[in-house]
Length: 133
Length: 133
DNA sequence: TCTTACGTTTACGTTAACGTAAATAATTAA
DNA sequence: TTAATTATTTACGTTAACGTAAACGTAAGA
Image 1 (cartoon, rainbow over the protein chains, first blue to last red):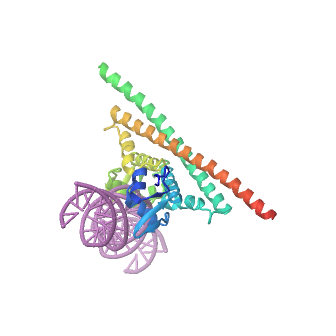
Image 2: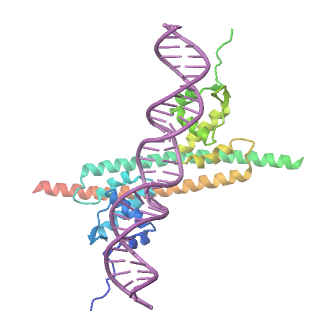
Image 3: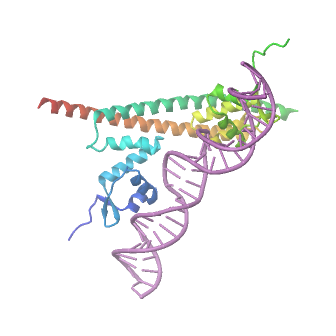
């Protein structure tokens, strides 16, 4: 008799949805946008390991603040048929650009924080003064 | 006769728009959302120094990836009538949160970059090999 | 057999942050 | 006086990334 495979290689839409904490609708949406292209069993979608990886990449892209369109490059990069060095350079440039942006944002945030801490001190002093009257 | 003031203290909508590289529409939109409350001369808006500062804050908020709703707290913080220590703590917490998020994003980006550089090397080797045949 | 769970497609709804256009008024320059 | 510039309000349009609902098919279990 067959044993249950320890590591699944095929997934239903809701299995993936559960695993990644997203909705089936979202997954279908990604497919609509051409970011996923699962097989079919009749009308039902069947996702394999490669599809799962692509989903991981999509979600990783989202976490770094990429739009789906921006993530498309990342995903394409991981499918061997289309991947080429030119694309890779391109993507690396994008990533460097994003990183620069993040660094700038962080600097601005730090400035705002130190700015507000001054305000904080001013506030506290004002409070103290008003308490003393 | 009157001399032109060196430092303006009143601005028309298009003056501000030009100065900050945005459209009058955007400024009106910010007003609609209650982030700006310029005076009027008849039907025309007149912005003063304080309004200008608030606009600066709105745009700064955008640069660090805040939505207008999130920026609202920042702006409110800078108008003395409403500002209080509680709000300030709140805002500081938000900013710290945002910074954490940015740091995480940067880490993910760095991971992706180093990941892709491996791919890059693999690519180059593959190219070399195929050239040698 | 009936219900429950899961799958599908189609299609309209939603939020944010404006863009764009139309119709109109007031001011200014030639 | 006429044209250009700048202003207003009203209101519909746009993009992204799904949410939500309807209407339907299918397979499993009590």
